[in-house]
Length: 483
Image (cartoon, rainbow, N blue to C red; front, side, top):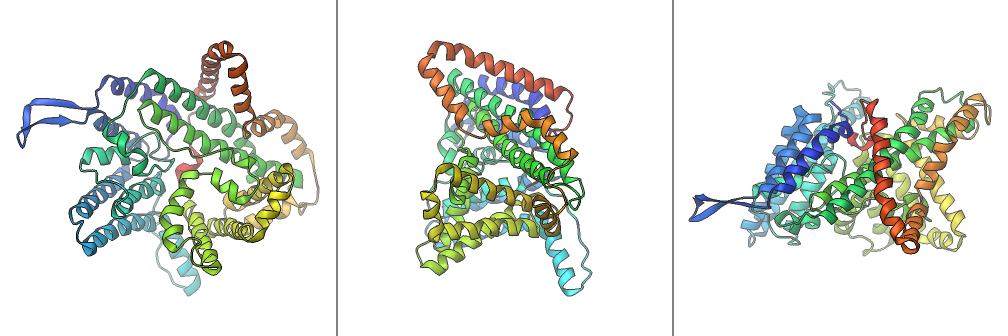
């Protein structure tokens, strides 16, 4: 069951925050002693654990046990890796248990149908497809939990001995189902001790409202266009309709995913956590390499730290550098979904990054910024065709439609889409740049008092507007929940 996390958060978040703020980090129970010391309950971590499980179970009740088992295995593996610190073989064995378990969960629930379908097609077999539904956010929490045992094995972090502490890290409800991917070292100190004050809550609310506006006002509205165009016959639509459709998805996926990330970062700030940034205006990039340094930053960091560098990175010659890049980008594609479209989408970007690494990147640096930005944006647009079409045939037919295979450059449909949604497109273009942020900084510099009064008023107005949109909307899924 996919749930509307936005509607749920409206009821869920205020109650959790009120209780959370009232609680201390720890509560000492003097009447109960363990090994001669009073019982200490990590109250805030316990609330995060309970609320995280409740939040996840609200939308995925039948699969919450998977996350619990995964967490318990990784916690136990971590304790054993630490306990047998002087035994390399045992430490490696416990790490493998963690890694194999997490990757095994992904293999079973995310890739089994894809693997079985292809085996049946290649060898003419009739292996039954279990057609398991995908647990919400499994790609996020398995990568997050797995990073803990890997970093512990590499001695980059200290073991988390508290089961409640570790489980609260995995079940942090702001980002449990769609990122950003928070590595343990990012929040290790805050799991132990954190402060919550008016400044952090205010900053968190601002970030949350910004993300909410991206999702509700921009992503949802521009996404309607893509839903309509995607359902059309690609052999008959005009080139203009095809371009307007995929541009709509280009903005939808950015504002949907970056909106959720902003909301998660804001919620984390309210709880006393500093989650890493996940987006940095990627559509302003001047190269594909830069685009991926700005898009889904935490996933890129994860693959760099745990796949690219262990494979040798760029330290073992040109041939192995190319190999490593293509492996990373093939896996990046498959991380997003079990289909040939996703695999080719990842390889597509991998090849372009290899080309930039060995010469084309220097050419892009010499080009005027608008040209290199347009080049990168178009590369991303064509990539999104692969990303959100069902088959390679559909992707090819859609790209053909973008170049006029439907027989017309424009028609009444494209004219209607453009005239009816010109303002939405304009707002999306504007909001995908850093112009608004620069204007806000300028206002704060030139008119400090005005900015102080205007900011909360604007925030309240945006929140009310988003609420008005949500009143009639019973279904507000985020695109990345399916990964």
